[in-house]
Amino acid sequence: MGRPVWRDVLEWVQLGPEERAALGSSGGNPTRATLRLWGRIAAKEAVRRLWLEQGGAAVFPADFAIDTDAHGRPTLRSLLETERQDLPAISIAHTDGVAVAIASLDPSARVGIDVERLVERSAGFEANALLDSERTLLDALAPSQRAEWVARIWCAKEAVGKATAFGLLGGPLGIETVSLDAHTGILAMVLGAELSEACPALAQSRIEVYTARRSEYIWACTLGEGSAR
Ligand SMILES: CC(C)(COP(=O)(O)OP(=O)(O)OC[C@H]1O[C@@H](n2cnc3c(N)ncnc32)[C@H](O)[C@@H]1OP(=O)(O)O)[C@@H](O)C(=O)NCCC(=O)NCCS
Image 1 (tube, protein in one colour):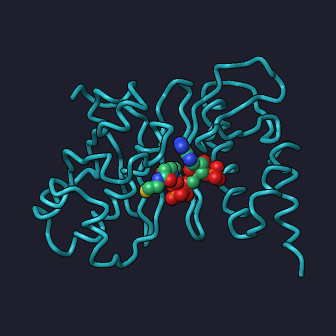
Image 2 (image 1 turned 90 degrees about the vertical axis):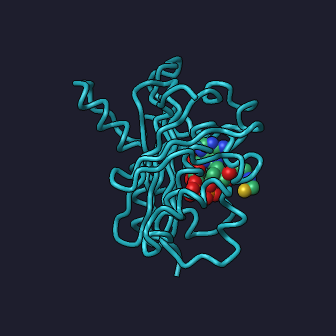
């Protein structure tokens, strides 16, 4: 059987011609193509809702396109006002069965989002993905909370990596959690040397990241805001 008809319908309603072509060439993996489609729908919907809240005119999802830069960061482009530069900043994430997105009306906002399924991690995961200082933060939590907070920190690192536009450049130890609040789910993170050099705009910040759990999924997002280091 070919791909489901709903995929074709969604693609034609939600995407412009270039996006459809790009999605069609995303490696031939239909599950990945579906997640990428959902991510684009989520991002466009976030943008449309922000514009509507501001009293802007309704636009169709296919009236703007989502491009990706050389590092994979998604950016918005209007197909109606091709010269327009002041489009919202967006970020996208997907994992099996879920896609999420965040948008900011401020085009220069450093937005980042991630979503992961809460799974049992191997014994070596913490050692590879977390700094000693982060494991000390986790030691202060109840042991029953640890797996969830490991996942929150991991998601937060990916969200911050996306906010820099360079991902986990230098690996996951290149972003450090300097505080966590188990009641609000808010973390503060700082960039290591490699990412600081790549993204000077965030180099001097304690970047605020919001994390939450919904069912078996953990997500994290940031607008790149925070206090000075
Ligand atoms: C960017 C990165 C964090 C994405 O994480 P992931 O778990 O692979 O995928 P997610 O579902 O969370 O997110 C995928 C989305 O991230 C976005 N993305 C990819 N690269 C990005 C970047 N450099 N900046 C901002 N957003 C990016 C894209 O929108 C992508 O969705 P799309 O392909 O449908 O457009 C990760 O791939 C990364 O760090 N890559 C670069 C560095 C690297 O490869 N390091 C390896 C050592 S760990």
